[in-house]
Length: 314
Image (tube, one colour):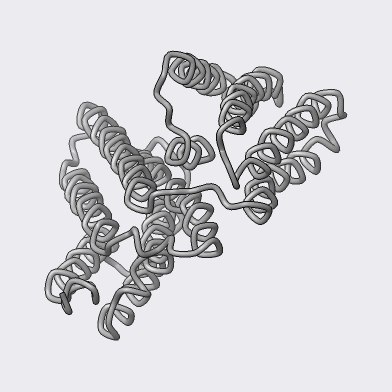
């Protein structure tokens, strides 16, 4: 997220900018390789070292930008200094005993999130609303596509392990309808209106943590449901269905709160939160697959019927 906001303000696109961007990409790739050791062995060294490399490359970008940032120079230097300080603390956290590491983890995540708040209050950096929201939208598309692919692969694999196809057909239909509905709901409102001020920009940016997490968690929930249907899990209903309805509800309620609510009429602002709540409790019904798909399809139908306020009055 920090890179996206930086890029909309100081995208020089020269050779050094591109090299530093590639370094950050390398840091992300190595960070991904450190996730498994972190969860399975509680070894966070690879994950943190890769993250620090990625962040320090961005510090170099902020220092370059400070030379020609004008009124935003102070903010760019606070970004650079703040991020550097937090990275030193991340490295120091590797020396902590495991019993206190998670306390440091929460504190350092909070520190990372606080750096932009402090920096922007001292001298706002420029941003382009359409460019920023386009980046968020593209990343959401990637997550939804990856989630659909993961779900499809899990369903295809399960087809070879069971003779009971009807439940898998239901899961397949639910996956496709749900992914399409999330895409439709997300891109219904004009997102650039959602970052018209500093406070709203913070809410939109940090609120997307939940949107992104929900989009990624949906496929994991579908895989849990498939494991139950094929007898590879001891998890019982309704807990299995909650593993995908909770991500769906978080996504719908999250995007409603961040971007839809200010641009929608009373009908949409009633239907969206109601749909999110109904999806959440859907596993308590006898036919959760079908009802979830119907709720999402009905929500999309309402959005097609109603127009965002700025579009309808244009």
